[in-house]
Length: 354
Ligand code: C2E
Ligand code: CA
Ligand code: CA
Image (cartoon, rainbow, N blue to C red; front, side, top):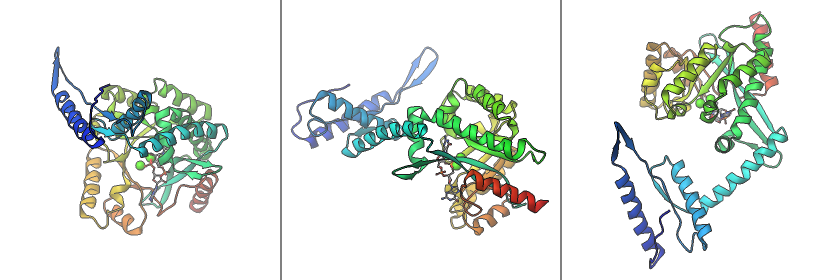
């Protein structure tokens, strides 16, 4: 904690403290050599100013902490002044945390399924399991709002187990328990870094697969490049164990993270999901088309499969077909649907092919 006093105005405090934060940042930026290791320190600061941001030491520290949280959320290594809006967001986050506990008790969560489709055969080859929160007062709350909170509080572990269990049960019902099992058919489940980092993650998956009598090859785990923030060799080891068990590993939102391309070569990755942000302008932005084309050929050379996310129009689909993209997901084929509707889709497909 750094305490500064004796400013004439809030403005002069802001200008002085900004300068200080920059200097602090600058002086920590050097690389330090400790024994044979080069160490790098990043520095995030949260700043609160008396009296506007708090009249007691306790309030000031609390609000500086809220600003620090924001600095970290902005990618770390920067500084943030406290603002009233931040406080509103912090209070909302706290309220949501207790609301999520209540919602779990109340069975307000549902898993929905968005079909994955083979482009050449126009055939459903599986689905992605996505979480939905039906809030009794607020209506449906987007996972984009509650997943980050659940991730931070650790509630994602419980929610993640629920999704995995539901997806495995449905997989068994659709494929594993009858002869209709085509080995390419699978349900994918999103795995957040926090879930992946659990020491007993592998055992947990094995337990759920056994309990639901699901074949491992029918479950795909979607991880993002963010899991690689942790020790890469440890991550690689865990992925290899999962793959040996027969699970499929895919990289979600490919192209939006910070990871190096080297991991594609070193980690046991089966599938790349090209992020929706590239697909949505594939028809009108030459650079997005070029990126998708490059990802396709790179994946082919590395023997990794590809699925395009967020396909909404037949023009987009036609271009993907031109590029030899094997699979897609998106509103063009179907929005995520309930378990019952998805079962209906699979039955209809079976009936049509029989
Ligand atoms: P994601 O994994 O990238 O999931 C794809 C999102 O894109 C889904 O949003 C899906 O409904 C949406 N989408 C699919 N096709 C289209 C399309 O054609 N157009 C548009 N505009 N959107 C499309 P959703 O369900 O709101 O999920 C948002 C994010 O929340 C997911 O992104 C994922 O990161 C997270 N999430 C959802 N369920 C889970 C879960 O069970 N566990 C974890 N860890 N994260 C989850
Ligand atoms: Ca996903
Ligand atoms: Ca995605």
